[in-house]
Length: 280
Image (cartoon, rainbow, N blue to C red; front, side, top):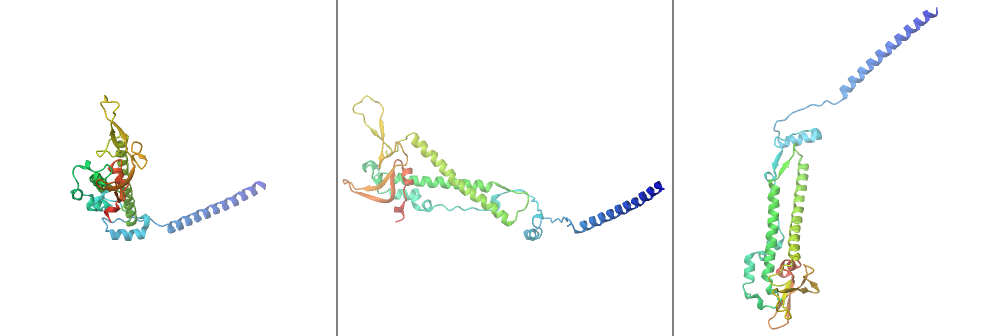
């Protein structure tokens, strides 16, 4: 009797287990079917050499899902960009040219030693040469940088949107623009400090002057001493300057020149000048 009841119970439980299994199986199939129906399908559509308008329309429609590989992944910048530099007005004006310098100093006496040591007429030609040299150096560096930029390659494996392309291009241009002044300053800093560190004497004896040694006539070398401008010694500092003046002959009267300085060497004094007199 007891064993018969156990068999009936086991059979009853087995039926319920089978029904539960079938119900769960059917529910799983239904869930998978619904998920497959709801889940978006990935459809790949290929356009061979589409126009830019088709690309823009597709980009707006599909967003980041759109993939447009480039047939050429590297192109030089000069194929799609042209750069025309604009220089400072100082270098664009005639007084930064050799012709203007020659015309300006034509009325000066060729033997500059007849002018007083601090008469600006002694330094006018040298200062204009320094200006011309700085302008030519800056022009060379700028155009070299532009040529290097134009011949470098723009590399991308995917076609970029107009916004992304402009952003990348603007960033590269700004980086190039900032690199040129940095290179110019580094080169100028190197030249200035080499000249000052070696104590090269200026042709116009504006930074050092020879001094005699009457108590030691047997010496075979000439001693020098640094020139001092407004308490600043050219032996210690390379950027000593003072006001530039025209000095009248046989007179101590001085005519100050607005915006111009004289100092240890022409390039340093010209860098400290504002050049106002050229614009008045």
